Image 1 (cartoon, rainbow, N blue to C red):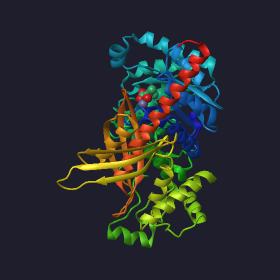
Image 2 (image 1 turned 180 degrees about the horizontal axis):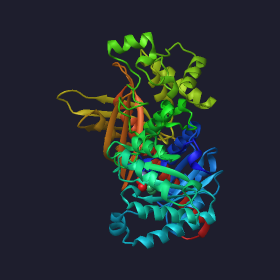
Image 3 (image 1 turned 30 degrees about the vertical axis):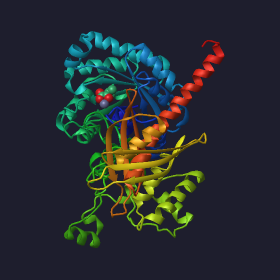
Image 4 (image 1 turned 45 degrees about the horizontal axis):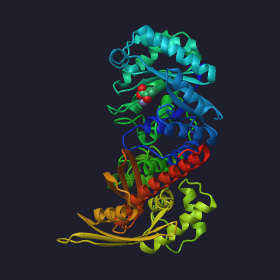
Length: 524
Ligand code: KIV
Ligand code: ZN
């Protein structure tokens, strides 16, 4: 392949690997599968599904995605050592198009302080890593970590050695978000001009956003010949995050006249995918976030509105519908039928099967009884939260709250278990949410330590739905739950119970497998 003559930029999504590594962004297996399906529908070229050697959970997620998601290449990350590489391959081998991504740090600071390895040892490690990965898999990517702070000539040597060893993609990471566009352009130009074999592989870019330049730096690399961009939905990732997929893709599309390249992304899926990732991770996008923020296409100033009425292009460089945002915001009411609901769901870019659609429609009807105006965001929130709090074993049958100024808040609730148990509990707390949480702990016998509590208004008005995300610690592990209701105490209780249910299900499964193990081995 001669990447220099190729005007197609490969979009490599690392939401499930680099994105998921960000504090507060960890996802359950089901959440990862949901995100992976959304990425496939968005038509990303590569999904980096995780780092299989990092934990059994990561391994399982990569394997499950490799086995079920068809279309994009499925990639797993590995350090340049045989154990990591073999583990990555075990997770990836059933994928339609597997890719192993190996990396080793190359900058002086990493060599001396992290790895305590000399330059030639690093090159040997990189070569051996790439060679082993190539024995297992035809598609191998190599990354010199902290490339942007690596001595240029030495970086060229490492990259050349990796190409000779069989790498099919070489990725240049700005691991700490240190570079600036002009400098990064020079770095890529240097590699293009000085590395033998560079035009036989795909050159890739991977930027972090510590100085707010991840998208600009990625675009500079494309101008200098990179033909793969590594990015994440909503720009989630370590520290300040990674290059935002929606921003970089829309920059390439909107300024095609300047960049002269294209991606294969179905841009109408950008907004729904962004919503899925923000709901799943609990990381909400700021209102003014480019492309997918609430205000990204809102025009407030009179002069702007006047111009827009004459000709939209006066103040709009992209059409909201091109990123999957519909213009009509006030949508359905309580008299709307299933057909109209389905149509709206599809216009919003979601594909639901009949069972999911019926479940969401029932929720929609129940909400429409309580709420005057239904907005697109309400419909999206229903779809995204359709499962929260319903997987059991516990459900809330009744929740009564007393609270007020100068009184101690109290909660009384009735919980029902799938085994038929009914438990009534009452508790007091510093506020209504604390009282509800305490009553839930008494009822389920599961004590959680709340580490984060967030409420997010889904729409506007005094009957707006409140989306609550709770993060808790249990036995040294962090869990997240979220739920939605026009009553935020109810949302908080459902979100808290969602976590308790997850813990209960896991403990039950462990108890069952222990019993099965004991029966099989005959040991106590
Ligand atoms: O930022 C980084 O250097 C990485 C590599 C593993 C590609 O994420
Ligand atoms: Zn990274």
